[in-house]
Length: 152
Ligand code: DQA
Image (cartoon, rainbow, N blue to C red; front, side, top):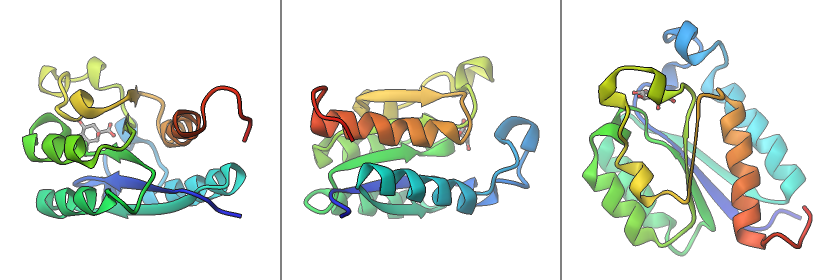
């Protein structure tokens, strides 16, 4: 039986995964990442709400709507991680556990990627592990929601 809903949000250009700079972001498409998240959610008895938008305002609205409907948020805000105070403010007001994910290791890349507004609202940050980061984030959220004593 699926239980809590986890909202997984993906920001600008992540719809192009698979064709976009594969040497940095790998060959998996976003649909393939969603499929592996669905499998992990089935194992963890979580419901998955997986979305992508190229628009900052749409992401902000989805984060606002998560309050009361989702148990936690996983977010790869992509380039907006480095610029968006609006997403930071929305995440803070959602009052939900948040895990930030980046496919690439942002600290190995250009200096402008080294800081993320999202990190200021995140309980944890996973970067550099490719699509596996999303699965680790689901495991981590499950643990944040259920504590250390329970097993999935
Ligand atoms: C990214 C890293 C960001 O710096 C970049 O703008 C992205 C993707 C990642 O998943 O590695 O679009 O968030």
